[in-house]
Amino acid sequence: MSLIEIILVAIALAMDVFAVCLGIGAARSAKAPRATFRLTFHFSLFQGGMTLIGWFLGSRIVGLILSFNHWVAFALLFFVGAHMIRESLDSNETQEKSDPSRGHLLVMLSVATSLDALAVGLSLAMLQVNVIWVSLVITLVTLGFALSGLHFGSRLGKRFGKSMEIAGGLLLIGIGIHTLF
Image (cartoon, rainbow, N blue to C red; front, side, top):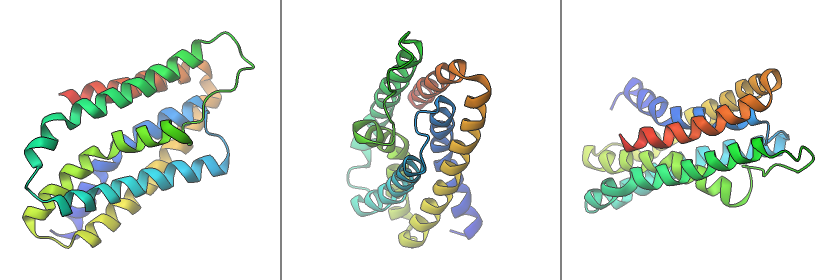
């Protein structure tokens, strides 16, 4: 694989991370620099790591994973999106919103956005490419897309408030539905 092909694959994998981070940034539920670090670190780590795991698993179980990975991604993204919408519609303004950069929400989002990287890793094993190099590029590109999504989402959230929180939740649900097709 050429460097351009690797970068294009990395961009394709990072698009769902960008969309999720756009929604999180718009909801302004992870405002602190530490939250930004946790989100970008985990999304990047999972994208690169799942690529490595997929490569190590090889082609032996590709049929099993491909038959249900889209359902897992859909369920996780739907749950988190519905949770964001419910929180934005909650009339209690003083209630603290859950932080998607911590705990089970962070893990669910990281897994949901990196399942396609697992499939890419499986195909890389068949192409016999240097998976360490590819994984590193995927990690770095994902890092950039995650930071960009959080930044632009935050700007939208400041301007449009609650409607952006609902839009962020709907965006996550939409990405989940898109994975089914």
